[in-house]
Amino acid sequence: MTSKPSLTCEALINQAADRIDSDSPRLDSELLLSHVTGLGRTSFRAWPEREVTESQAETFEALVAERVAGTPVAYLLGHQEFWSLPLKVSTSTLIPRPDTECLVEVALGLPLPEQARVLDLGTGTGAIALALASEHPGWRIMACDEVDEAVELARENSRLLALPVSVAKSSWFSQLEPARFNLIVSNPPYIAGNDPHLGEGDVRFEPASALVSGADGLDDLRLIVTQSPDWLVEGGWLLVEHGFDQAGPVVALFRDRGFAEVQSLQDYGRRDRMTLGQWADTRRAMVPLNRGEQSGLQQGGSPDAQ
Ligand code: GLN
Image (cartoon, rainbow, N blue to C red; front, side, top):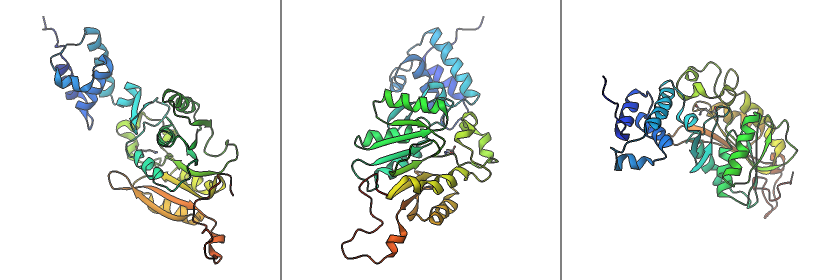
């Protein structure tokens, strides 16, 4: 007869961590056991010999088996923290990444009016829009996604977190009511269809519609950069996330479209992962300004200004 398997937290965590092939096997293992038992992760260190019930151990084992097969932890837990907000996630959306918090930081650093109108294109879980709403209750934040489940999920996250974001179903701008925004943000799909990374790690389980964008990964970014000026106030900003090797072409897209103040910004790993530009009426800026007249590069005050 085989001896009874140990049900202590420490043993369960160690055995699972040995089997999980990820960058953070022990963390994954602790998060799953915490999810199953309701115990905080710190308690595993404070009281490692504490025993869980047999049924908890079985549920844990089922989750570990899925993790070993590659399912992302966030999908197993059903939530992911972003900007300190516990967001519900589902397999119909991208799992919010820590790097995208850099985009939130950049957005928060822009000179925007107190009641800025903001649009988050392709919001997924609602991560960016909700992070901005948590920092700026006065901003009027709208988000859209083309996927029904994502629209539902973003609305649910908005409700659960009591952060007002109005979520519309729209593929980019196509189904939005005409409006002008002070800031448009987006973390669109930007991976090239043949990128070998699509066959590795968590992305294998995420929806291709949230990841892949044409042969060079830039199809959606081209559309967003091309169409954004019709949705920005004069002096409004467009801020997008992109791949670490796409800053050159994305900066060119912004400049060719007539954006000013175009710059690439880095993520936490110091890679060029975002591009920012300001929509200014360059024809006006080329006219010699009278002293004291506002330059075209300043932020338009009224959201409905052309
Ligand atoms: N940053 C993600 C990744 O590399 C991709 C996100 C996206 O396409 N928007 O997995």
